[in-house]
Length: 69
Image 1 (cartoon, rainbow, N blue to C red):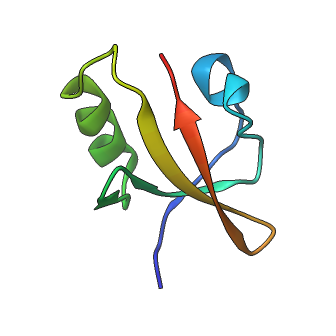
Image 2: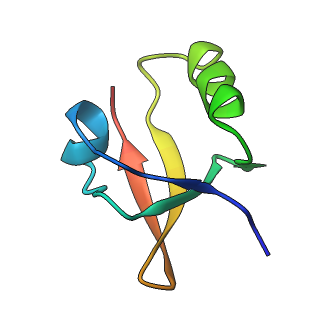
């Protein structure tokens, strides 16, 4: 079972991709997310022009979103 990161507020690119409060971020690309620091490092080390595939959970169901920064 994946741990993930709970969304407490969504704005900017996250909100445009459809994320909302209560969602749980599970993976960015092929990397499972376990900490906010890990997410920050992944974002810093990716090309800002490249879309990011995000796996998240909403109300117990896994969903995908594409984040464009």
